[in-house]
Image 1: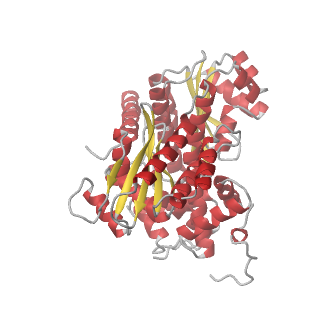
Image 2: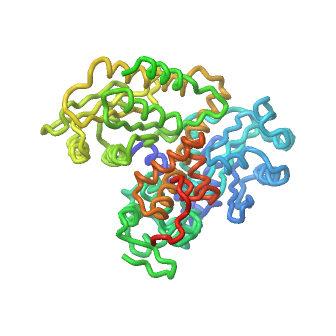
Image 3: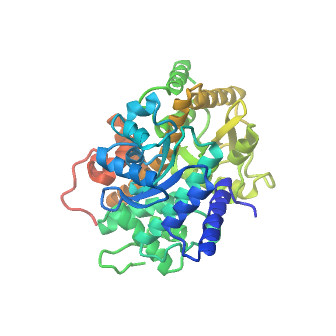
Length: 246
Length: 247
């Protein structure tokens, strides 16, 4: 198959791992299952996922007690890699929580995290621009950076989790796939431009505008990128009354 | 090309170890300076992300942005070749039949371009992206312009990859990944502004960038402020809000 970049291959590989696990356990694909698969496949001690629907991180799942403890610590002290990842929209890679850089950056969080037994914490934000969905956090009991290949896989796990959560927000069946060829549609700038336009048309936040766009694409069985192009070209408007006018 | 402006640009591009370094602003600077200083009409830049996927990070116009995306979607084009091989790639007559990238050549010709050069962003064995320079006229770019372009790209690449401590490399990874999300924020803001003001994406981007420049803010910050409602869309135009909204 040509036309597939390395990232698509990784995402496909990660999806296969998650599905294999779902099949072997006889359970549906869920955020929890993604965390568990990540914990088993990546060389990390544990994985935790927090969602941010209320403006406050809420623990959705954790593969171990340390993950829970670290999530709790973030809330308690109000700082840490996950808080920064959520705020900046970029990953925060703390390879050595006991090192001077981490201790300086998070004077309250870092000593307590080390005391709890964590050596390294990698916070990967689940974000679509200003839509902050949550954070996937990987921790290790020993210090050390994630090798590039593991980091790339981790980001693919984060992509998958983000996708699932975004589907959930749009009220779509979890794990429903866009046509396979489309890849991850979030690489298309028109999807985000359309989200911005819909947000103005409906006078709603980006999260709701994005959910509406996705739900509409799903209902119409149209590709998200295609529908977004219609919005950007002003062939389609979203109407506050709920009736979309073409 | 003014030597003084060129020198100024080199200094600007070398200045990356500052506290408030912003990848997006930095790459936009590179693209804008290429168009201003060289005999080219447009420029676009692709950078690889942590996933190994090329991403359009900066472009001098919406049209070029779409052309860069076209390369990614169709898996062909000079930027991809320059990135894959680490070697400069040129096409001096896109309108001529044949060539290495038939679909890209058609798209570029339709967009009004006749020639293209793609320069790899490379430091030793590490290739992190590529810069595309587009021209509306056929023919080769002058040797001086090419050398200058490669020098600008090299300085920018060194600026990004320069000998950093391990912690600094970590920070760079965080910044590059964060910049990808900033791009998404900017696209969302463009859509919002375009809809509210009844203008196109190009105009919306110009408004955001103009405001960022005149207020000495980062593009990503302005985009975020507009979405959060801290900066009104009418402020962007430097005009008072109209009393009767044309809707």
